[in-house]
Amino acid sequence: MNDFIYLIDLYDIYKNLLTDKQQKYFEEYYFENYTLEEISENFEVSKAAVHKQIKEVTDKLLSYEEKLGFFKKKNMVLLGIDDEKVKKEIRKILEEK
Image 1 (tube, rainbow, N blue to C red):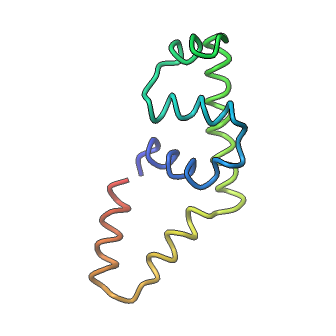
Image 2: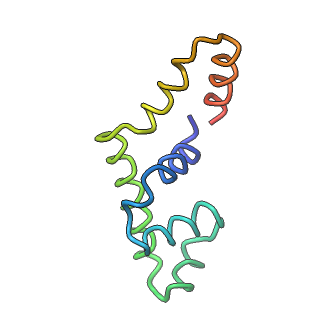
């Protein structure tokens, strides 16, 4: 699965566990496609500080999923559907991510 899309999926699930600043940095970096330099200028902090926050958010999202597993559980529920046609379509969508 594409790491970029996986992180965005995790963010959708766990974003409320992040600080407002972490959410803003993540959204500007992943959703708005801003560079670290652009984000650092927007928030008047160093590029290294932005990089550190993005890395911290990524680590937190992966840790939350490892401990809580909501993304995995969501997919398991979807794959528990008995209709083979629906299952096939869901698998196709998940593989695209």
